[in-house]
Image (cartoon, rainbow, N blue to C red; front, side, top):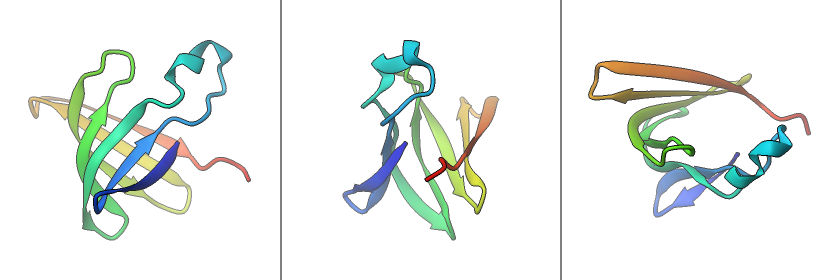
Length: 87
């Protein structure tokens, strides 16, 4: 993932994948227009790269990685934790 400023908000796109069968996802937007709501926390759209559907989501950053939480109709919610890439 590469996160960058997009008009004062946070956006993120996929820049590399571990599974070579997923290379079609490289360059796809996954976080769009997330606004800061606290220390290392943003709220905005999280995009499912397979379906293209957008979900209201929260992105939280800590020393270990990134947590993405998204909800559909405030009923169905899910989350993922992503580890920082080794440099």
